[in-house]
Image (cartoon, rainbow, N blue to C red; front, side):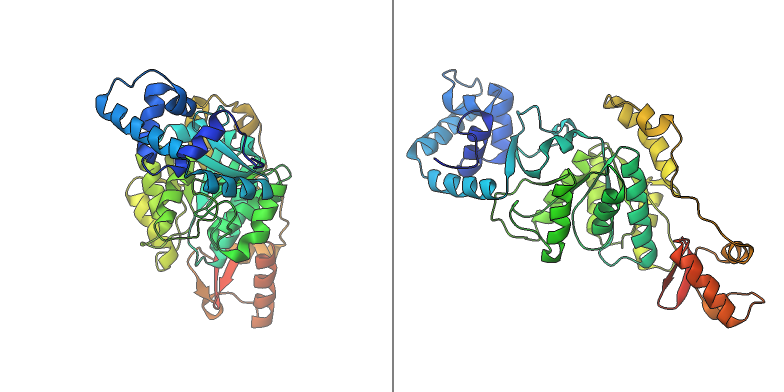
Length: 377
């Protein structure tokens, strides 16, 4: 068979397992725990000690010998070859150790790009699809800084905060980003993010999914995807989120998986801040700068056996030095973090001069403007 799948070993048997109806994800994990590998599910002569499990094993083997899986196996192989994608079974040494720790980890991952990127220490950056201008700037700049300090930035490739996180990570010289998608490895959703997906792969990152190639986006798949985002990561940073937000589902999974959860506070009257404020009330770590997050993540990172020195041992600049003149400095001190209209900014400068200074500060990334309101970032 001329496919993109290795015709022997764990990848071969793991993919077959996904195509057999009796071989449910939970059953696969149970059999692997009992037998030790996918290959032994089909080739081992030793019976499973658990009689109920042994009966289900016989049904799987009967289904396998019927051979009805072969056409779908061939189709998937052609897709993987076309996209230069890999299959990574849970029994592979390439499978990310962090993900193995969660309840019901995916038995098989489909990976487009560099599968070894999954071994890097990862931070998830997630948030609202309807982000504010401030959220855009924070997600992009923080992801760039954290990627520059050695973390792979993981997100869900949705529009909004997710896309900014991926883009920001790749702006760092050696920045790596990982996108966990809720479709097959050959389907980019939303379609407008196809160039972003291509860039992630070209920069040394990866697209990851547990769904068989050809699987379209379905509402039920996004929570499943979110558990992988948090499962791969040492911690989850929520930049902006409404009360009813998929980002809060990711944060919930993170807590269940014993991961760190971080939230950035925002203006109390902004809907995108309410989810973050709720997380903070529930015990999430409030962070105001990247150093806060790195300091908190040092413990989990050490437990993963990573070298902290490259991340926090030597000072790293969070951003290039920004030069301000006296008037810009004065205006920045006057502005608060709550959005205000230009008429509400109390200064002695004429309106044209005030507007000039506001534009200058916005171009330097120090303030945000949205629908006529200005605020510090």
